[in-house]
Image (tube, rainbow, N blue to C red; front, top):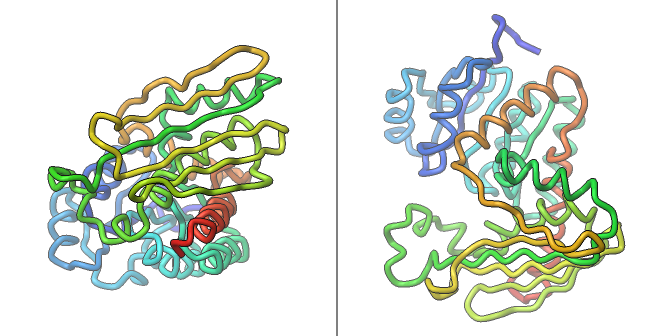
Length: 301
């Protein structure tokens, strides 16, 4: 797996708030990796982030790929996808952000590139890797007889006063809304418990609000309510499933640093064993297909 040394050499692409707060600190702290360097679309930001962690700054993404066994992405989805294809072609394992792309064609092309190159991949879906929520998903998936599930993800990212949120200025979030940003989280949890989605119906609510009705391979149905334009008093996240065992409510979770570390562990394991992780790039491509279907039904594509 390693081109040099006993630890996995990994690079980071991206310099935004997510990279600064989560990716770079987690990579620097992980004992199983050698954090090689940073590439970003803003050279001055890449230099600052690299300097903070004592790693190299790269002006050329392909040069970073050449020096690494794996790369982590903290980029907008449609910037991520073509770069990740190049990374896979260079033989790098992929730790991807969600969604992997907002185009079905780009998501499928990325999945196919990773498979051709035989590189491991993991999509960082926080709730599938945070200790508390990952354990809850696994526990509920082992229970038979779930009848329905519900995910509510209401935020007020774009309401007055939200400028203090570093993600409120994100152009792709402003364009795509909650469906594409938090929709992957909701789908990852619901499918993790209830099985693959076999049918999807979408309806629009106020602002960017999207209501999804899902049917799963288990026979259960579920709903996902997603919004970044909810009133502040309505904001919050709640996921529950109901069935023969009663009601199970997803617990809260800690910060993203530990969850990202767990995703990195999962990538290292998949690369070492050759066994794909459930949240690999093919799963990420399926999420893009579902979200694109919903977007088309909402008339927002």
